[in-house]
Length: 223
Image (cartoon, rainbow, N blue to C red; front, side):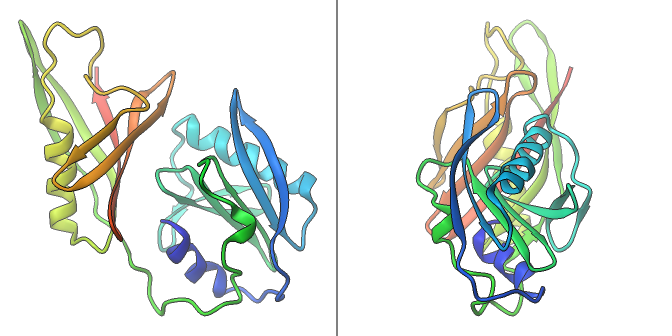
């Protein structure tokens, strides 16, 4: 879920017309920093909510629910995720906290939730797909692509795309269960896919974009 979908959710909650206030950048987890912005709430609380949100997403914790997309409950706020967890959209009543770890994002400039929003979310939750990829001299490695979310892409196509992108790899004399690496940029079927993750889970999050079409998913290796 990115900005358009999150604005739909936030617009359902009464709020003032105040613009978002920039709270600068804050260290949220290790050496990862995020830009933070708030509406009707102080920056100290915004930083606290952001740190807890990124702690949970970077640790790979499961969301607390889906309405209409994945969200986490953080310090009394409901926080929706965007772009494989790199963006955060939180609200509690008329209080809002926005954050992003993406260098090109400026949450204080994002549209206010009081502005008009689409009548329905353009994001779809498309389930998961399991498979395996070969390892030279060893049994195939079983894995799954999960939490497939798509924007302006049909679910069937999104599942096939995620499956073929992840399981096209072949692990030949490699030193880890997957040949992908955190920070990789992959071009596949006209999409540009960025790979992210953390030290414990490795390259587990994939964010793919082609114009307005977006496919995000997570990968889990069964080892």
